[in-house]
Length: 301
Image (cartoon, rainbow, N blue to C red; front, top):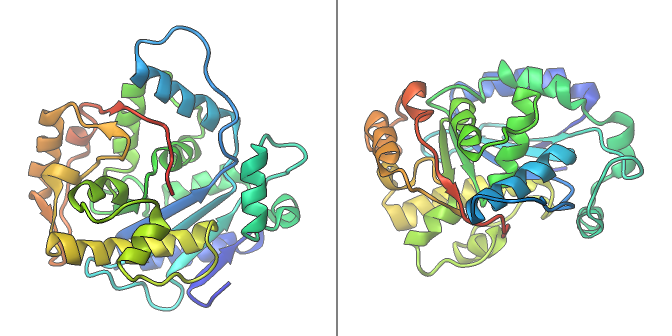
């Protein structure tokens, strides 16, 4: 692990969460990535439509499976990484013998260097981590900006962690909860719709933008750091350092924003833009109104 990325296990969790709480006050951009055990189930029954089917696929897998890693990288509004350690890679308790996992995902993560023996022996208890998340400054605050890449499943797992509950049966309730805990989300894959020359997964986009990776691909810490540096390079090159919240805030790739009124309300409360001159304050009440429809559970990262 590099000096910029801190590996967090059960024995240093409290210390590193305290460091993260201190850092986020001046670095409110949180780039995030997770590693999880893949897709193991498909829902059966009658569905209202493709949107309902895809949400139920997400829900049944997130409810069945355990999060393996979470990476978070902190930056300020100018894209400056937090000094010293800027990325925390949280390693959760997971047993390849007892916990469900898709074989191809297990193979990918093993090749990426995940130490599953260590995950089983000294991995973080997920319920304790959820308690610490609530008081971390990472969630529930309107001026904390989450940056991600094709992240429906990532946020599904995080929502399960912070609520300590299965995901809601209904899609609309899921998005209402998401906007309470994570009011401000930017998804690079969604932003790419306005960058016609950018294609593919996170590594492809980073390569196109000439952003260098630190650490190992398919580890959550390295991927979250690459997500952060790629976002700010992309914002400068394609958006003149000003993301139009009316078009992009809260939009996850694979979901179509069908409630235009909801998107407009979010943008109006945020000041309509988000650039290097500061972050804005949003209303949680307005952010929980409305929902978006899930079009595809396909992941591309």
